[in-house]
Length: 537
Image (tube, rainbow, N blue to C red):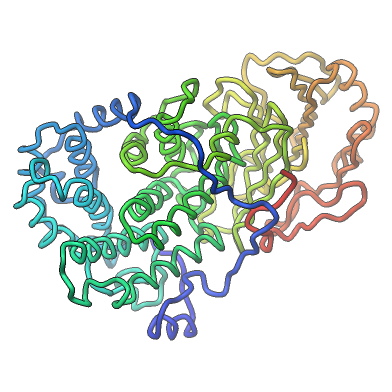
């Protein structure tokens, strides 16, 4: 799928050097730094990783799978990791052909997407190229001479057969150009001195550093994408493992940002953020098995943490890559997944015409904003606002959530999240079996684990959730009702007992934060220009 048309200034930049693939967009960095420190001791082996290898390795490979996009190369990688059916794997690899071209597939380029297997073939070369008993010399030669078809310095910023007018997607750029770079590097490391393969002399190093650097600065255009984030992470894992030290550091930094964003907007591996691409995935309601979570569960399996949800659902091919590559996340990321300390309020900007991510955490809960669609061409899937508690919920139906108006995510502006608070232009959905402690009119109160009290106001056109920790539930319920006696005022304002007066517009325009004010102080509602990560942490 194709994304961004760009202007003459960008075209000139492409001819004479590196370009900014998102044009003049530059997102400010914000006051929350991305943690990089690593002191944790990681295990050398993982029972979970072995189970993923075995699960993927036993998947069948049919004859027709050899000549199209699919999981063939990942199945072969899993078998090589287990040293299983090595001779057969080599035979299959030698049968493979370049069945298409790299880059996005579309109506004018139906044979695109070869960079998906190309990326994994690159992994196989680097992992086993120096082990002839695993990757036979004739198989390695077939990889280098035939299957790894991208080499030299042809850095492609645009999608195939678009006359250079449509920008390529992030995942395709990283997979294609990362694989090109790594083939060049492998050949050079074998002693070839031709400048054609020298990534410094041919400009590949500079261009790849520029691309990753821009993604570090602005975040991902395809933020939280299902399925494409999985392929972006895979390409970065290759670079973090096998590239020059400069590229490895940049790739590691970008992975750290992607992971930190996840940690801030998740709780106990529950993660349900807004995403860009694809609309077909809007119906997904699982909270713990997105592709990003699969990578994280693989990394955690090498830590000392044992008690976490290890289900990866249909994402085991991504768990495979997380398990077999050397990247390990920063200390603070691992801690933040499960320990919200004293809580925080964080806003994440994704640039113009995007959706922000907003999260409010306490010691034992997290509210995740669902975001906003910015028109059909934006490809942004808005989600319900979710309240995650310290429980075993793994499906949307098992958590308190709210959204609106209507059931159409294209109409939602679910950015109404503030500290310990959420509101939307629709009713609050309570999980089946969750019993109210108290009810009065449109108000109700619920008690979650760890003494988390949830006060809810719900009508067809307005939903409000207010969270309190370590309070007396009956008392706080009465205090909330006393502070908010007028339902007409409640359409625009909510007063926390002994706390802030919040103003909001649940029908706000799609380029405006639903929250308007706190104690009379106007809030910055223009989230198109919010920093990458800012807030109170």
